[in-house]
Amino acid sequence: MSATLLTDGASVFRQFYALTKPRVIQLIVFCALIGMVLAVPGVPTWQEVQLALIACAGIWLVAAAAAAFNCIVEKGIDAKMKRTAWRPTAKGELNDRQTLLFSASLCAAGSALLYFWVNPLTMWLTFATFVGYAVVYTVILKPLTPQNIVIGGASGAMPPVLGWSAMAGNVGPEALILFLIIFLWTPPHFWALALYRVEDYRKSGLPMLPVTHGNEFTRLQILLYTFVLFAACLLPFVYGMSSWIYLGVAVVLSFGFCLYGYWLWREYSDALARKTFRFSLIHLSVLFAALLVDHYVL
Image (cartoon, rainbow, N blue to C red; front, top):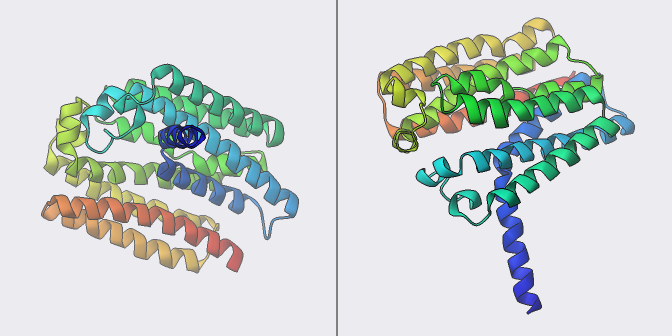
């Protein structure tokens, strides 16, 4: 009996954990951590390290709450798409009440952590991000316009701003530069995914760009966005946030993204769209890691 209860408990835990979209949350917290590191000149003190850890925990909790809420709103859509049909809400393993309570609990815990142990500004910015993603993007923009990912990308670009705010108590221009990079990175990243998942999106009824404007138009938009993103990725060096170390990495990565965009524009294949999507993840992760290394090397 006890072994069965233990197994059932582990299964329920995995279901709730899946609602938090762990891989997405990891990237969010990583980007927030970069904002924290860059906001602190030199090597942080132990007190600053503790503050950063608490801020990461708070941001993780609120971001996980937003992901869980998203699963409630999109359970019908998720059930129609191969990429998301496995989610516990889509399969009916967790009902709306359970998921909503889970989301509210995470949001309340994360907000309290940020308000009382970090600072009120970070709490309000994080909560605004929750509302922006879970309500404005998921409920309003996503089913309404093919520009959903462009406008809604503002919420996804907030993590480094939250990290900066947690350590500095303000939102500096450096944080806004990091915000701009992620904001411009988001459309080509998601549109590459939407290209090879276009039938899923068509069945779901969501007006993603490849569905409403076609494959060729979407590929052109990806290419144009990679060019603009290239310029944005140079801003940390231009503004004096980083040195030649970051610049070298940024140029190589951004040129690579542009190259993928060009290949995709010239001759489409699902395989190439997948590679472009995967490279976009490498692009952002390594770019921010380069900022981190550059900050401490100098």
